[in-house]
Amino acid sequence: MTPLPERAGRRCHNALNALHSALYFSPALGKELSPYGIDDPHAINLSSRSAPLGAVGAGAVTASFYNYSHALVARFVPAVWDAASPETVLAARLRAADTMLRHLLGEEAVRSAEMTEAARLALRATEGCTRSGRPLHAANADLPVPSVDETPHLALWHAATLLREHRGDGHIAALQNAELDALEALVSHTASGHGMNPKWVMSTRGYNAQDWTAAQQRLTGRGLLDGEGELTERGAELRKHLEEETDRLDRRPYELLGAEGVARLTELAGGFTHTAVGAGAFPADLLGKG
Image (cartoon, rainbow, N blue to C red; front, side, top):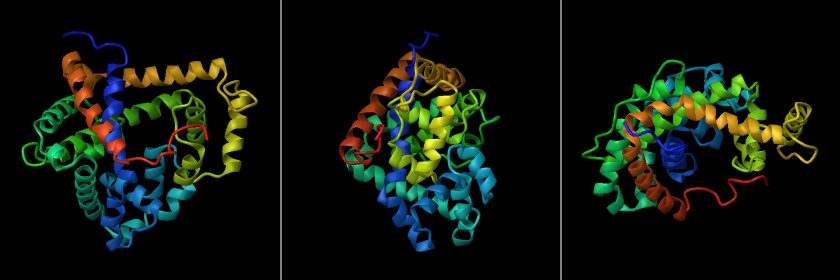
């Protein structure tokens, strides 16, 4: 087997993750859930991502999501399951993914040979994922796999979801090993220039400016941020190590696919992501230090 180039798995994941995560910014998701009384943006996000876990309580969602405020989660979970069961939410989620991908990519793309090829490659990669210690991945791995022949775009979205949650679960382990709490992880990621704008972090994860400042102070006390809120050399090294450790914990799916398959999947998924971003899949101010 040809060794994978450095960071090849990470690049492939990044291309696929954009196709998965675009759903949480799509109006289609809210339109599918609003008839059930789930219309608050937080409730939409929390229910749609946690539904594979079943009708769990706030503690399980906070633990598996890691970087959300427990107070925010507890406002909506488990009460959201009184509005709609997890099975109902999952069906709505898949319908929304269908609508979103057709809108962002176009009808020709979702039925294309390239889409089918990407779906088959991505599903092959998921065979290298492991369930143990990865709650969000494991929960999604128990869901039915959409037909590659009939709905290849949904098969690709499903595979992207499995791969995204597999990497995310591993990343949480790396964050815990580095002793970064939920908000410290977000603050340091933003300081690296790769995370969400603080405005989006606070509005979607349930934190305020005081929380943000307190996390910055804790990181400054550890020598990871300087007085301007920028990463120190030590902080930059830690963030680099975190990504490398996450790569290590997430290497099996891409090793299974092989260097040629990973390169091809990255090419295909990257093309779809480029089209989706150009069609307005994400807010223009989502990323950056603010």
